[in-house]
Length: 302
Image (cartoon, rainbow, N blue to C red; front, side, top):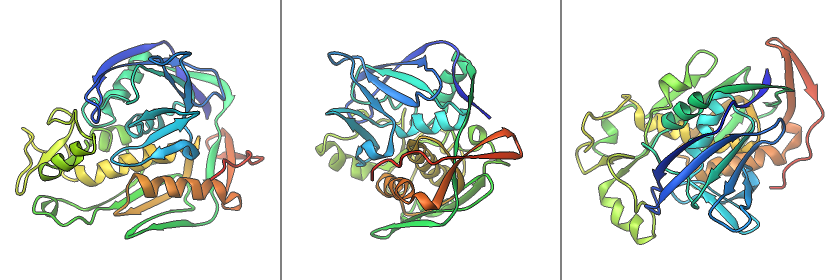
């Protein structure tokens, strides 16, 4: 019921999946009401970029944030990890434009945060409670949020492919009953090998490998050991959506549903939610069953 940060700094090194650059990443504790803040240590003055939905600048194969001309990309897996362990405030130092991909899931970030320890702050946590349905359509993709007592997320994966068709294409999880860490966090990003040349021609996926993604040819999964979950594809799409929605600045109380959606539609939904201020309210809790309604924050510009 209280805001959280970490107890001590912790660092790791990885590579950027799109740039293939070696990246140093460090988490540092932050005081209450700071939010999640990225700091580019490789740039003069170490400029910061706030984790905010209105600062999303690019959603091609990942989610990028830009503030005052400074960009941090591939933030969604880390944001999902922070959501899952309830961290509200954190300074994230990175010496590259891109957050390292690690193994393509949220699990390594959760491990890192747990090693740093969780610190509870003496300030009440606030939640965005959805009061009315909000739906966004982007081409043939649809995303929506509806009122729900807790947080529930569902996703329908509709791509037609020999491999995808062998596995579940829908998942729906109530996170008051299901552990994100156990059931979702290890779901990796994935892609078809036939699309790799096109992505690299766009200077994307230059660091992609079977160490950080599920590789799929015309008929098979190429990774030794196969999938971590039978429904790993659809669960990774849920992981992405949770990370993208945490850019709203607070945990959402409601039900998310996505169909054939991705980072673009996730961000459109986040912006639509924040702009429609009569569709939600900020609440906090003194105990698990005692909500305290607080005045709305100034809405973030869409």
